Image (cartoon, rainbow, N blue to C red; front, side, top):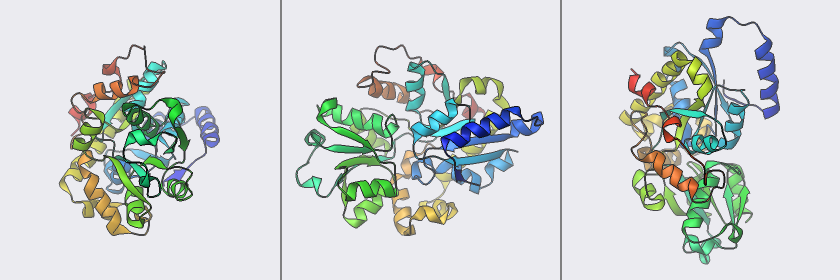
Length: 336
């Protein structure tokens, strides 16, 4: 069952679980994975994997847990409350710079799937990223991947940190409300929120990162984004479970590659359509190219992500980052 759990409850569950004498085999097959927004199309692979029965096919009992933002999911992983996270690959680099060891073992996408939206009102005066000076920009959360990408885009346009403000507004309805109420003049979000705003005439696309080609143009290289990552220490002791997870998720990516946006949408929970299935399908069709077909890391992708983070992040600047330790291809290479 998919569910949202407060961080405090995670801590309580972790303590109780640690003191319970569960059989070793059962503990090995029970996997909790937190997703930085399951309703977002960029993170649909694990939900689709569950719907298609591929986790169970591998003998896994996977509990998918919803979170409002990738940074929250990251914190739950570090706290030991979950075994894995579906979030952006860039967190593995950011965390290594902070002394934490996280490894991405399946790469879902080769483009962020994000869009910098500009409110219709702000569009009257803002024509380019350089014109965002003095505005408030929406991100899902501070320290999230939308935060990272937003700061890079405006810095590339010549703006400094004090030239604009960042406001964490989440995604979906909270993002839409913040834009309608003019709390933010622009902001980064994903499908299906992008298509909803455009259809209602409340915002327009300013920078599109939904395809590898447009991402290359905006960021200067491929940007591996949505991924499945775990703590390196957990991976060292649970290679069998990691391989089973990779098998299921890679099979899902092949399934996405071989099926249409309509066929994919038919497998998703109906509430993800937000009352407009046709719009959901259109958004998925527009962004389907973001997904990898085999779960492998795109060539030169980690280098682009590191370059992006080094351009503005004090956490990363001046730090020695070993990119080879931020991801592994061995599990997707061995996936059946």
